[in-house]
Image 1 (spheres, helix red, strand yellow):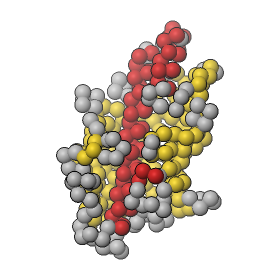
Image 2: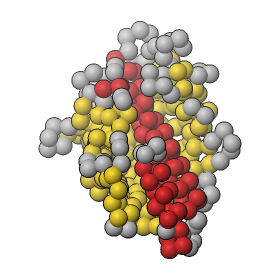
Image 3: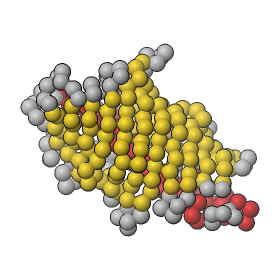
Image 4: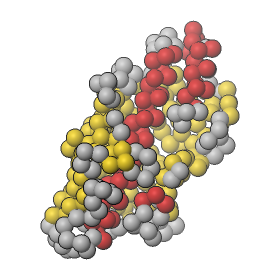
Length: 267
């Protein structure tokens, strides 16, 4: 979204600035959208890695860890058995690991699980210890609950993010919260390979930019995410930024609509 859609919105804001941005100037509104695109990507990534960490823990048979600092994070499970819960799982990226998706991660992701990831009713609470996604420090609580299979046989998960925050290397902070349902539609048969996962997301997200601009998003039609290469295949997203309401991004038709005016974009 950031590379293609943000410039389109920028041009629209600039051309209509006198009418649209009486409360927030166009540059600040554009910056808020850009920051949302960043923080959303970071927290979607956190969800992917946390689920992958729980799956890796379940399948571990090597003692106390999965992976090494040379080729992946160290995953530690306590208590180390298949039946005792809750479990404390840590995913330790140490001082930095360049991962397959080109993201450098460092620090620790902490997960408390009440059962394994695929078990209906299981709950997984994720927090962070000096964790960084590239140059962004990540904070907050990511809560996931397995809701069981839907009518199509796909597992659904409730996702709640509270007090989500990233801090840039310049010291700017962006906040984020989420209340969504995540449906795992592909990749569930290959638990060791996170990169073939696909999922659909429904619900709401909101937050505040580094300059205090509030934004909110409602998923009108399920967003279909693919991890590698990272993209959104389909879905419709409604966005409100400060005094500008009802920006509609349609990933199915590759169009963006602002105040009734529709533009194409490339994905």
